[in-house]
Image 1 (tube, rainbow, N blue to C red):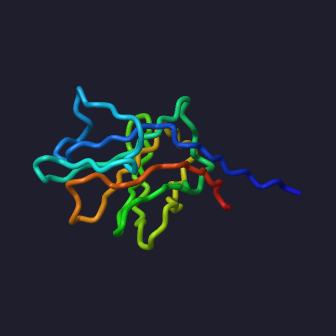
Image 2 (tube, rainbow, N blue to C red):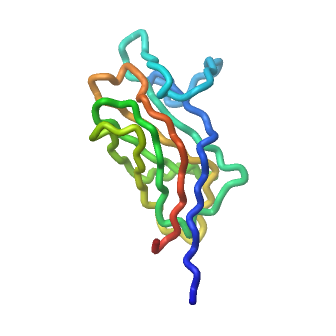
Length: 156
């Protein structure tokens, strides 16, 4: 009797980045606060959009070749629909796994699923989640906290 491969759960120990969307990356000299974007409301002074990202470094890198999907478990404080886009940071590129909507109903915890591409080798150095809140509130952070990632084997 064959044994099914097991899922791997990785608790989120990474960092959150909040910065004006006009920057493509976090500017140098940024201020560091401990906590999550769920703990407070941050906004741009100009009223322009604010980028909310979570980044989990994988050190050493992991091979996702046998991973069929990644489950993302979050806590949400959003009162209107928001989105999460998952990106796998590879050695020489970034693979986008798509966008999922959350906060459709009041709930503090939600699980979102993202399918991974089929590949013989898929070395992943990090997982980035880009959050977008309701367009009417784009000048503030998305109220969210990442709890964990679960790597689900292909065929499960």
